[in-house]
Length: 405
Image (cartoon, rainbow, N blue to C red; front, side, top):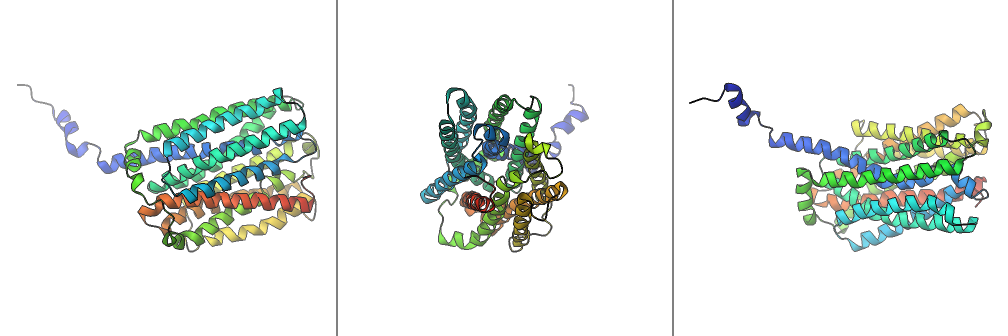
């Protein structure tokens, strides 16, 4: 009788088979990367609508659409979130995530196509703002489901969702710069069509990521226990998380108070030609996006000792940038491109770092059974900060003469 070799016996030995802990660790690493893609995908359409400043200027030469887009999106978004919180139901993950991404793809296709079958500035304005509202409603359901699901996973999922949000802003800025560079400066419409088309294809990646996530063992176990998670927003839960949720909202409020409105209105003082051809605001938007990603990545790797009790130290000091950047945009005191670049970089770095830590430490306040509801609440407060920041940004811009609204 032929006896199995020692190598075969060793391979079949339980001691060399992957342990459950090892498989779970590998699953979690893969899941974290998929959450990054989902975080990237769900906020991508909003960033995509904000980035093509030159295209909106071509369509609406006497109207600063960036402020209006931001306001419409965020108001519709927050109102939808109020309904979601009021219903207090466990998210229907597949329906909300896949359906949300699908609506985003349709909107990113219809908005540029409307240029060819609509006439007149008023028709285009109604189309763009209505599409933005629909996009916001779909993104609310998608947003709440992604954050709720990520909150149920071990450490790393929420951080990667936040990192994905930063990457979405960076990639949309890069797409716009590349598509603009591929065409002569006067072909703004053509370059914008390519930009929106590539953007629609990119959002499909979010659907693929979710479908891949569902196939992982750790995801199947998590989704199996999800209906048992507490989804009601009881008073005891709010007592634990409210202060940190307010700080989370303030971190986003500060960023949206200045981006994209004030940032896109800072002129180039040293190279005026960059104002005329539309490159300068695109470059500043790309710089903000890159800095934001660096800040989010740093927060995912090192908290610098920040906890739920000390997170205010990285949230509140950021408001000192508000008067500084308004001065840069209005030509008071700070009239050098180097200073403008410094301010935008600091806004992005501090924003990415503070926003990521603010959302992660909220989960440290609650029990495991409350994390699903906490994820939905965090998504609500993120959007509350965004809508308040965008609304205050419009008022600030009007007071400072930045937006002809």
